[in-house]
Amino acid sequence: MSSPTRTDRDSQRSVTWYRWEEMPREKVSAMLDRRLITGDRMMLAHVYLKKGCIVPKHSHENEQLTYILEGALHFWIGDDEREEVVVRAGEVLHIPSLVPHKAEALEDTLDVDVFSPPREDWLNKTDSYLRK
Image (cartoon, rainbow, N blue to C red; front, top):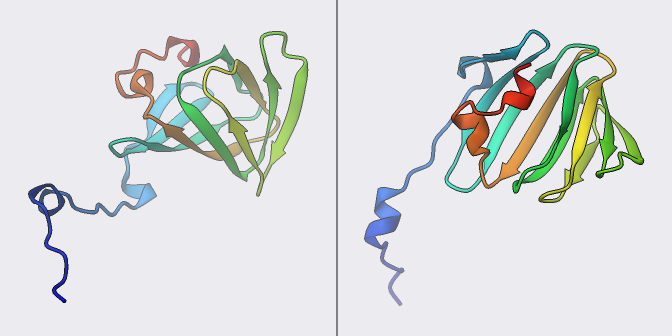
């Protein structure tokens, strides 16, 4: 039995290796920086928030996983912001598509956000809600 042959599409695709400290660090505001890695259908971000940083209430079509590596974020979920959760180092919050949310950094925080699909507003810098 012969092994499967690669299609032309497979041969044009390749893996990419990254090192976080070599990725450009974008200063979004005085309180928030980020580094981005983007694939075809997903985005991975390191988000650096200073204590007291507020991410205003917003929603997006992108499904989101937020994994806290250092620090803690207080989230308010929903239009009425009645659901609250504090996510600390080693914890992950899943935010489904179109769910309104806001956050405050309770201490200096490094979080890893995963988005699917990639955040076009982050890539083309039209995320004005973060740039105030």
